[in-house]
Image (cartoon, rainbow, N blue to C red; front, side):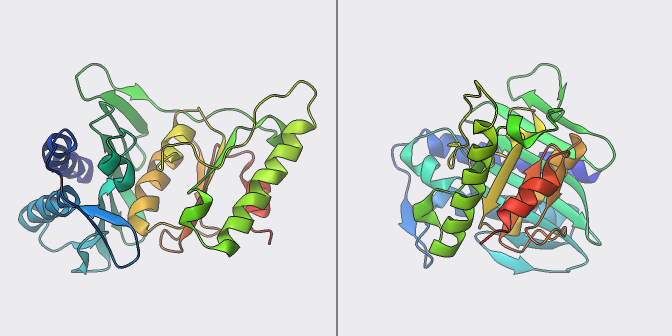
Length: 270
């Protein structure tokens, strides 16, 4: 079984738990120590994925949002059973299961599955990035945009201000202000940079060509790693906010490529 095939199997197992729970009136919600919410579906979905990994890849490590780090560190799976739990708990459809596998610091496969939207996005190193409907149909290749000027770029950031500290919020504000200034320099330009797309894993919108730059402040490696591979295999770029390629620094920039260095400089301004 390839890494992507196993990642798809994990996503199927998670979907089988999260979608019925999303439609349930008896969903149990609690608050974690960091103030974020968690549901019984989060916990059950991650447990199901870990059980599958213990059978199919027993020597691999796991880094999960809900159950922590276990096993080896040279080859590991990143799992976020429900990215966007607050949306999930509120009955909004903008949430997804995030899965990626890293082999000696190289991401090899990734799946982002959004059963409430009926969509799944996935990538395998060197094999491109794809989208398909969970209801069937053809797989559609993902490609980033060809925008090569920040003045024409569609730029977003996440999360909203109340979800991050004041320092990060100032960085996001400066990033979006610079994007707004650049957009305003083009006569007739009427695309406003936005802080909140309503879709926390908006790196998918980069891969699909619907956005040109997306700044993620905060989040764990399980949030960053799946998006990083999907964006790169769609022809775009990913970096941490220091310009490296780590997925565990608490921040990331995803772009279509040509405007990456400029947006990275904006993101690093205090």
